Image (cartoon, rainbow, N blue to C red; front, side):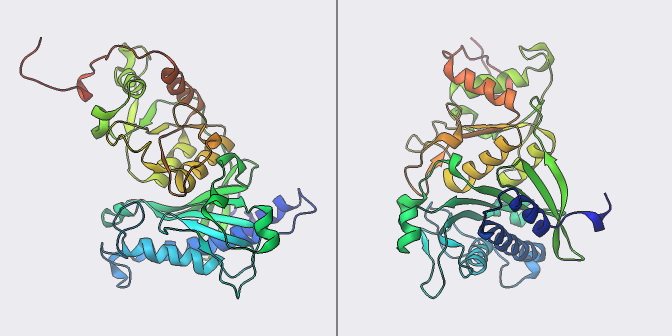
Length: 361
């Protein structure tokens, strides 16, 4: 389709709103606010070390997860807030970079939605120029908070992923893309730099049910639970193993880039619960990463799971809760879930991820 005939993000959202004649348009306007923040972040990312205000590794200190913030983490968070707080569509916000929920300042009107976001996912990859992104999720605020205009509490945000109204991410790579769902499948927009508009370039994104590609951080193999180790060993065994086919491995260490690859061509991503830190039930944040990416995968015909249950069914217990996550091609994720239900099997001893010694038994 010629670029001039492609729908803009605004036009696409108008079409979606026509499916609900009684809709107020607040959701459309909020998504457009998010898209503006993403454009601003894309520009800041593109300047790299040339931007004196955001260059370098040091940032605003340490966030609530104990991670050192980069300058762009802090700046990106501020861009989301400044773009979305004033419009009257939000009751409040929560971010990976903020300890507590963000209250909409009293001079601004308050709305009926909640915005949760990871303002700059994968920022540890900035200094090596790997694609990074922003992840967002939109929820409905509790009725009593909307009616009374009260300040929000952490409990107001603790909603399972199945209640999301919309979710998506922006990818800052060779091209800037906005991939999102409002509950009617997954669509992708590419930023037209000539017009400054997101144009619809991927109208029907689907995840193939089968794949021969998986992504996992192999350096953690000694901490994996038996079902994950079994799955990876079987994939690595290739054509001569129980799967009867060869697999490729991928690992970018940027959540948005990993999710985008899988949405474009299939695959399975694993950042599972392991024994490295028994106090943690996983590495990824449920509200800011697992739920929005899980929503997109399910809307695209894929599957997202903790390995033990659908991730969208998990009731959050805290704002910055971490969780194990497996997502991607449905048949592969379901296989991993099945391995978690089955009794542990004997270690297959694949040489790539097994301990080595000069001596053998």
